[in-house]
Image (cartoon, rainbow over all chains, first blue to last red; front, side, top):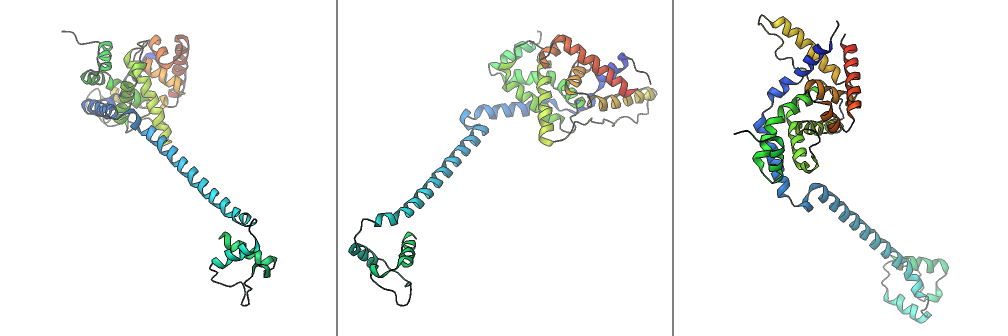
Length: 130
Length: 176
């Protein structure tokens, strides 16, 4: 089949004519105007894209604040044994007496801080850290 | 009384006249639908025409009048179609408009031959590289001037002519 440019251009002019004939122009026009009205009625800051960005920023800030709070609390807990250093033996005993230790370290657990060995002191400090 | 020009309607729409926008849709929606269908839109032609005009009216300040309004809107339609492909991750397909091939009229044979060429051409057009396809459709289907096509597609008149020439050559090779 040999085609000349004219035949091809005639066929090209007919492309899509049926799809165009099926188009409801008034419905299309009405839908376009409705969308434009809806867009105009929405303030610039309430555009869906901006709201999404704002939501993401708030979420990121929230996660940051939560993470920072958790980390600070953890550091505070780690810092508690250090604060015990300036206390005298008597003061430490007083602190221990004020603590409610539900489970004794051992059946014959000593009551005085001076009686605790290194591992028992470590265990005690660990419990105080929570 | 003569009907207002596209430029006058555009100016009226910029001032908020909705009737002017509706008139622009009435004037050019069919051309946009023909282009979209030939470029590979399937059942979503009406939605794409709507999206095209919505985008056009939203960014009407970007219309400088270098090309005709119709050419400019069709270029926006080409982008809307591209976005639609990207969203649905599908390749452009030709819409096979076979609804009236079985015609009983005396000149039906010639028409069927013409329709056959049209169907095959439609399938081939969607295989062209996008720029060649758009130049071919704007020139052959929409009968636009090269100057208009060049402005709308962001190319030069010379390049538009070359694209058209290559498109025509390829289409003939594929169809023969």
